[in-house]
Length: 480
Image (cartoon, rainbow, N blue to C red; front, side):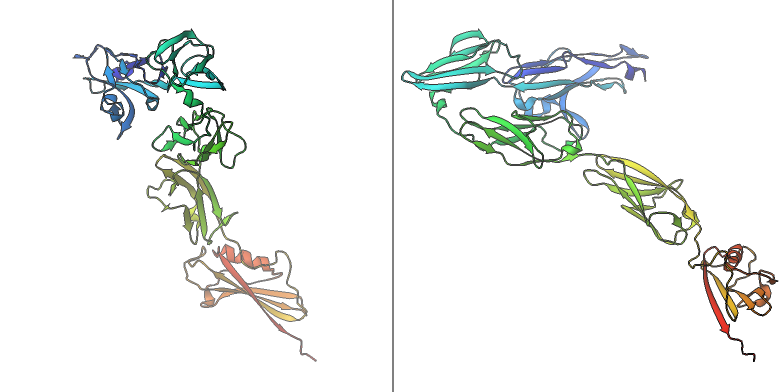
């Protein structure tokens, strides 16, 4: 455990910009304990890398993109010769010791940028003696006032200047420039034929990443087109207003899922504007926090069929798994979890997990299943009023089976009867069973008998999911 704490790598410097074609040195310092117990700690392997394969770093010496251009030096320094624009990347140093836990990769690494020296023609005009051109030289790796060398037909004609250079070209002249201190890496040369004006070619678009673009990664789009005069560039996103950049590059320091979409660039000079083909940026990202919904919504009652739905924004599309608290086996695999004929035993905390190749995210919802209510409208506190003598029969049927709370006798139906006699104003209510009249639950009584009382009686007897019907038998007085 101690050795893991004492392994360090520091980079000096952590950012480098190199001239295209030059040699760049990446340097660092690393430390480790001299001993661990009785073991003398020794470094057995040192590598620099930019890529991983099957989660293992790929040594620059084994990377075909750097073949013949890598030289490891003393300590943890490495030289990269003939630097190319494709070499722009983050470089990390890793060392391995003879201790089982003695492996370490230094973070965050060295960020290498690469830029060519560019000669730009500011303006030109034809004269009898030749073509007079005003030119500038620059590189993105160097400050604006950095001095440059101007080269005509292989010979230096002006050194240590940061001002524009003017020259009258004859037919045979070739002019280029180089940064002071980097004479051996000049810009491409221009000649009198270079001043033949032509419109931009169809712009080409290149992407800094050759694999999947993952949320949070740095990403760069580059636009290029051959034109004379030199083209200016602008970047656009389809269905977005205005240019995103007025440079040949569109840079995302940390690309986001919202940056997915179709992009294109325009190259423009005084002759014409040309538009590139569209390139699609597809940003991969882990599922966002899932949203859980219920159908039907509202209070969850016993006996209904309930569907829980899970939705999460992700790329690639998420797969879904449903869990219930304290249960190891998943409830369902899929976006929906359907529970038919739901009961109180289904109450509890449910989890929806959305997952894809980039990661996973969970949301929870608590279900509380309530007892069902009557399906029929039974008047609460009104007496049933009839104009003639009548018998009112109420049927309460248990929809979920037996036994009831009061006893263990299996019964199919209770019939409550109410007898009204208009003459004496007396109401007689009683209860009996259809199958066995001797085992009724309630005592017969006299007095006012309401529909709500019938509901209460059935609920008290265990008919928690109850269906009510009422039959009225009317007979008119026939007495003379």
